[in-house]
Image 1 (cartoon, rainbow, N blue to C red):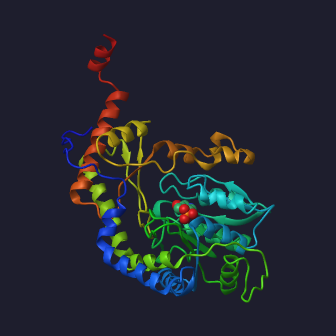
Image 2 (image 1 turned 180 degrees about the horizontal axis):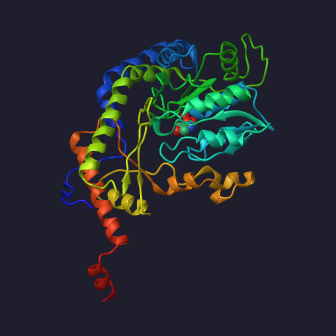
Image 3 (image 1 turned 90 degrees about the horizontal axis):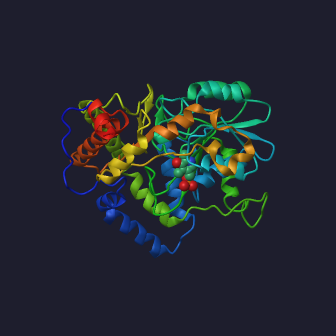
Length: 401
Ligand SMILES: *Cc1c(COP(=O)(O)O)cnc(C)c1O
């Protein structure tokens, strides 16, 4: 147990996320970019979106990038673009944001869950292989928390069974696996510009990356009602366009993305040092960056052992250290997926993760003081929760009295 926990200072609470702190560093650039869009009065798709698409394609080293209205739509359009629909199954993780499986359901296909690796929280490739059958039409790994899934075995499975990989890279822009960026690790990569993602817009937005020119052309028409130009609709699509205002803001922010990701990695290293020095590693597992990976820490997610997660979270929040649980309910346990027929015990690692994970503030503008404060409050919380759970003899006697 920790020996010298400094009591937390009575200073300002540390927020879980602070988008205002980031905005203060780019305010003038953003205002100018937004102003320019207003001057042109060109608000949907257009030059800003084309520029952003070119810049994201270059950033991910992909041949094509297609902007759309959200990360969820990026997943939906990708599934449809690959011709997946009713009767088909898509293998994915139950330990992810709802939209991953929601998108599969929404296009009429069936989400087929397999369990996660307990260290990285990403899909367990062996279980993916075991789950494949004749109805499996895609594998959708989620690069959870900003670290890519273990792709090599998935590539092997994909090649041998001729099943495409759709990356849910919504949390992982800039993450790398063996030197290649998220977005080019499968047939198609899906990104979200939701404000809390590492590259977040001023509202909803998304983008799809691919090296396949035919798929890119199909995605481009699917986002505009299947129109190939001149009101010729070769198939029925959607309205899922990206706004020029979003693109203009995102282009400004993309210039800073590498610095912000580095800031997140540095903060993660600092938490690691602090947590080690506070001697709480017997109760707290820090995130592991697997070999050959570049983690971009959309979340810095601890595992709190011993059934103490909720107590730790409550103590931290009550003592001015923001924290959050991603995700408290695995998707096979969601009421809307009852029809899939899963049992609670089907995915023990996902269940355990849902009960044990706790994410700390990791945004790049955190100060040293804030990082220390969060770590100290965490140590206090762990110490208190341990005492509650394993009372000393003295306390047992006191309570019994
Ligand atoms: C954010 C997110 C999405 C959905 O993105 P939206 O832009 O909110 O629609 C999908 N999958 C994962 C893993 C996400 O984190």
